[in-house]
Amino acid sequence: MIDTLNYNEVPFHFVHCFRTECPKASSCLRYQATRFLPVDKRSVKALNPTFVGNPAECKEYLSDTPVLYAYGMSKLFDELPYAKAKDIKDDIIFLIGKTQFYRMKNKTIGISPAQQRTIKRVFQKYGIESDPVFDSYGSVYQW
Image (tube, rainbow, N blue to C red):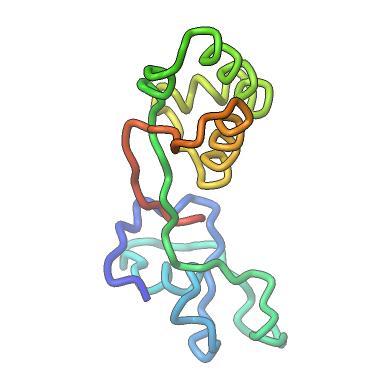
């Protein structure tokens, strides 16, 4: 259950759920966000609260557990020989795209746990077993 939430972080098109009787409500981000709705918020997108479905198999469920995103790659290649660093960088760019790579490197966007694992696999491909070092980390909700 979320104790505090800055509602300004909730994306504009996020779909809320108002089913208080749902057994998953205490850990569902869609329901938890409704608890922090500002009183001056006129309308929000919402799931149909009268929809009859099996809550145990809810396809709209989103866990309210934040995930750890990495930010920035300014020191990612510092400890590597130039040739190896260049090959690793080229492989990462091939896998995630040049624009995406530079946006991640410059902290414009975060690096998801899946992307962190992808980068680690590229390092391992070149015989580097230590974890890639990112500039910083932060927990975010998976809206």
